Image (cartoon, rainbow, N blue to C red):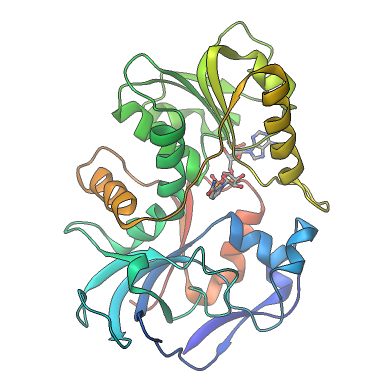
Length: 329
Ligand SMILES: NC(=O)c1ccc[n+]([C@@H]2O[C@H](COP(=O)([O-])OP(=O)(O)OC[C@H]3O[C@@H](n4cnc5c(N)ncnc54)[C@H](OP(=O)(O)O)[C@@H]3O)[C@@H](O)[C@H]2O)c1
């Protein structure tokens, strides 16, 4: 099968190559999926680039196939799998199985049957792929961590990325008042997603203004937590959610740890965003999309052969919404 294989850590277009490798076999409890689409997420570019450097201890480079989001059809069932049939359209994840060597930047992948759900009618493979990690993360932030609802004032920093575009729409669907922070070229995009207020980060600093928020979803971590805390209303919650765009041993992980420590010291609520998969959570995201409450924003769709460019696009931190890769027709 065609697959995108990594040789070493570094810039995506220098270290990824498209080649032929053996098709994986589904083990007991696993499903072989013929992929129709996947997307590029933070774990993919950090595993390709090898930053934070600490990650290199866990993610070996040579021969690895990256990618975690699954959208495709069931090609074969491993021993003991029930509930799926060959040809079923499914979406789900490989995330949580470590930086596995049989990722989704390929024509086929295997994953646990318990990490897949049937795609609802009306969901395209492209939208399904865009919805897995970005949708699960945004849902976790808005629903579980912020408990956003009518009257909640939510600020989303990094509103124009994959996670941010889902978060703005899910929060609006739940009746929250949403302030979206992004660059000047994306203000119309986030307004179109329903944001009540927008902040152009090149013209204003949300941590220095007079507005206060019940929840701040921080997908960028470009302000020290002590400054971000100043924008919280009494009792508000800060959600640090970025491994970071910078190089370094720990990159954004250190800032997230610092935010948690400062939260304890200043009695400020800080909550982590657990975008982990459960079938129920992904089904909820799928329903939001097929009901029309949320429209996945897709930056660009790349054919599998152009995966190095797709990963480079995410690595630029300028993608508008989600970067999707498709396989075949
Ligand atoms: N908790 C989890 O399970 C989980 C899972 C996946 C991802 N994440 C985290 O979610 C975050 C967002 O990921 P993503 O996929 O949405 O894409 P992303 O590429 O990390 O974020 C894109 C956004 O970042 C903004 N941005 C980039 N550089 C900036 C800067 N210097 N100042 C201000 N804004 C800047 C962009 O704004 P403009 O382009 O408009 O300028 C855009 O809105 C990541 O940091 C990632 O670590 C967490």
